[in-house]
Length: 282
Image 1 (cartoon, one colour):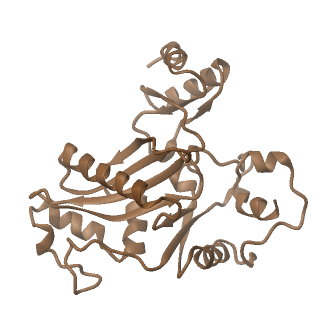
Image 2 (cartoon, rainbow, N blue to C red; image 1 turned 180 degrees about the vertical axis):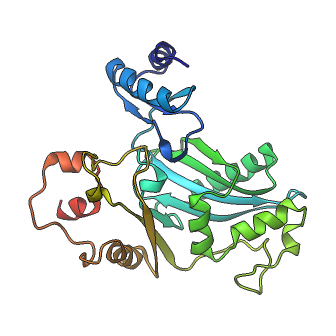
């Protein structure tokens, strides 16, 4: 609740740490601190948005994976969709390029996180829809649950469109006490809600920014959300869906092509809204 308490917590955890305002949407008042000085500034900003401040161990650079899970009043559970962020942890989900289904998880990792997701929704006793976000170490099977949203979120809307599984419709029926096998999938018209979608295609979501309209706004992206919209592309494989999505975000872009200008080391170190083209040039 105070800057001093935040500094004490950071000393126990060890730097770098992540500071965020409690109960804020879109990562408002959050960021990473590598020193006491940085944390002091960050804590003051966060406490302006909320009376409570959360200090976490920094997991910047880890993979960010999400699962959408549904459960009925009779304890039937299924995972509807799993998604992987192309951007690592440290970039807000709303700022990240997201792909469904996940592309870099092996079978063991996928099932380990899926099993955990089902345990989490049962532990909390959620009836309806739940979004669970993980941080997964890219070099081991170590993982943390970083967020659980027991409601429909931005990710749920993407999962619904990506899989053809009407999450909002099903969640409303489940909250009325109807069993998963008794709910018809209104999109397919053939399957029931207990049928777990299996994708033979790839879906890519890329956020859209309009930062040029605002003066004195940093183009760097991070743990707070600046995007104003997003596009979704479907393709047989990642490359196809990715190129389609890039063309939809900006009509002047042909695809995954580099900038013609030379790029600096700073552009490679600090992600901006144009990071995809910086990577292409590199």
